[in-house]
Structure formats: C-alpha cells, structure tokens
Amino acid sequence: MKLLIKNIKKLVQVEEEPRVWVAGADMAKLPCIDNAFLLIEDEKIIDFGSMNDISRIDNLDDADVLTELDATGRMVFPSYCDSHTHLVYAGSREIEYTDKIKGLSYEEIAKRGGGILNSAKLLHETSEDDLYEQSLERINEIIALGTGAVEIKSGYGLTVEDEIKMLRVVKRLRETTPIIIKSTFLGAHAVPAEYKGRQSEYVDLIINEMIPMVAAEELADYVDVFCDKGFFTVEETDRILMAAMKYGMRPKIHANELDYSGGIQVGVKYNALSVDHLEFTGDDEIKTLLNSETMPTLLPGAAFFLGMIDPPARKMIDSGLPLAMASDFNPGSSPSGDMKFVMSLGCIKMKLLPEEVINATTINTAYAMGVQEEVGSIARGKYANVYITKDIPSYEYMPYAYGSDLVDTVILKGKIIE
Image 1 (tube, helix red, strand yellow):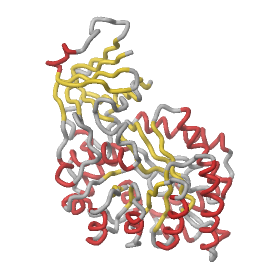
Image 2: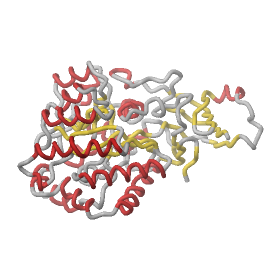
Image 3: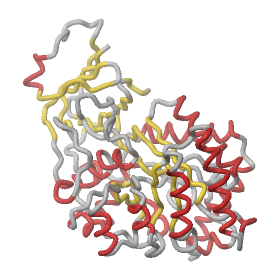
C-alpha cells in the first residue's frame, strides 16, 4: 500500500543524498520544498518533490493501492530522534524538586540518598510488568509529541538483577511499540549505598557480572558511564569501556555536566558514538571533538531544570562541530520528553537558530543513536517516520511557540498512529 501526503505547505529537512551529520556553518542550512508531496510505500519513503511534479507518480487514480492525506496549510517534518533518555523508571521524584527550590544542589541531594539512589530503591520495589506499563505510557506520550526514535538507558537498577530487569523492559518496549528504540547499559550511573567507600568493588561487579549477563541476553546496543565529579573517574570509565567493547558495545558517555571531568577525552579515546551533557566544555575539549567521530550532545532540559550553566553551544558550532540535542527524559533532572521544548531551550538559552535546533534534534541525533541510515531526514529509502503539523506560518514557529502542541498527525514506519 502507498500513502501520499499532498499539498504540503513546506516539506522540511529533505535530502537527495543523505548526510551522516551536519556540522559548523551547515547547521544553519535547512533544505525544504514548498508546496510539496511525500510518497510512502509500506514502511519507507519512496519519493518526494514539488506538487508541480506529482504527475510522475503511478496509480494516482487507483483507490485500492493509494491512500491520500491533504496537508494544505501544514508542514511535514522528520520525526525527532531523542538520543538520550532514562524513560524506564519507577515513580517520580517531585519531593526532590521541592528540595531544589529550597536551594539544595544535585550533588547534595545525591549525597543524602536522593537522586539516582532514590530511583534505584523505587525500581527495586517495582515488578517488571508494572515498570513496563509505566514506561509504555511515556513512550506513547513522546510518540504523540513527534518523536520517532529514542535511546533508553538502564542505570536505576545498580544491581545485576535490577539492571537486567530494566533492559528487559526496554527490549519489550522495542518489540511492542512502533517507535525505533536503541538500548544502552548504564550500570555505572551511580555507586549503590552498600558500596560506599568500596567504589572499585562496584566497578568490578559491573565488569565481571553485569556486562557479561547483558551481553549474553543481547540486551544493550551501547554502554554508558557517568564520568563526572562525584561519580566515576576517568580510570574507572576506561576499565568499564574496555570490558564492554569486548562484547561489541560502543560507548555513549555522560560527560562534563558537573565539572571538567575528562569524560569527553576518554569518550573520544574509545570512539564513543556520543558524549552527552557537556556544560563544562573548553578549548581542549572542542579540539578533541573536532578530530573525532563522536557527536557532542547537549541536554538543555537538564541544565534548565537544575538551574545549571548552559554549554557553550554557539562556540562549539562556530568552531566547526556538529551538535545534537536530546531530552534526557528522567525523573530527577529532566522530567520531560518534549523535543519541541528542547528546541525552544536551544534557541532561548543557547542562542541557536531555528535551523540549527531542527538539525540538532533530527539528523544529528539520529547519528548520536546510530540510526542515521534509517531516519532523521526526508530521504528516499529511509523509514517514513514523520509528523504533520497543525496550520503554522513557518518552521521557525515550532521552537518559537514553546508551549503549544503543534503536532497534528504522526506517521511511524508508514503507518498513521492514532
């Protein structure tokens, strides 16, 4: 079956020849077609162009093989790719939200048993089925907001059994939902309370027990480490990445959120797919990234929610780097998976252009989760993961109207999602 979307006011992020990523000055360029059509067959995009050229499509008059959608006055975007989330979690942490309002820092909350350790306790007490149902609600929420691909991390288990439980839930979501999902093992998210003062022993547990079990069940595409002040050192990160890479898990690193941690450098050393957060990024870190295949990924929702400094996004782009932006959807520091709001934060807080934030949440985040050949732009042969907007005046309106729901119709792998 074919699906034809016609009379599209503007078809956004089109590519005749798909790119791996967009970097530097090219991030301010956004190829579009006005008054366009998009033709989908089964799961894939097979053609697009100006309505003036629509006559080249066969079977236009055959209602048995062609379904039509009229997008007059509306735009079509590639679905967002959210390359950094923790959306498999149990319960919420709004009490800590109050603590933050009262002035406690992220580190102070963590030191007194809150933060990640609080989520680990809740997750331990939650059954796998309940965890799946909670997470399914969040998946459906982000689909409705326009996300078509998402990376999900473990890291709220912190025991062998609970990390495996989380990753099994991620696998189940992958098998039962239409969204593209990548899975990341993040056993090194925090040190459990029972290992306080014995952090190296917990690292040994990750290396000797967790990683082999995750690999045996093929539960993770990637490995991650929170390499930052107060969490895991460069040396510990080095050990974990070395062990995981023997099982084919490519790194994705939490780096430089709280201080200059060396996380960017160790990520690049191990050819990490991405290094994420990056609030503390200087000239040395930028130079390291420029000579790599590692995608710098910013998580503006976390900096916004925690009241932290913003990363030097403008300087990074002006230096020639690509940038991706993801939601960091999690219960403690970014309780939202709204990628449209992420774009707005990129414009408002980091002075990025609308074109730059669109590139940062589609083509570049597709690379940051390893699905750039499948999604991230409107290109022939890619999955038909797109959304149709409501009637809007321009693509700049998307990050501008930061509180408005502007998604009208979601299409994932060629199917209209009700």
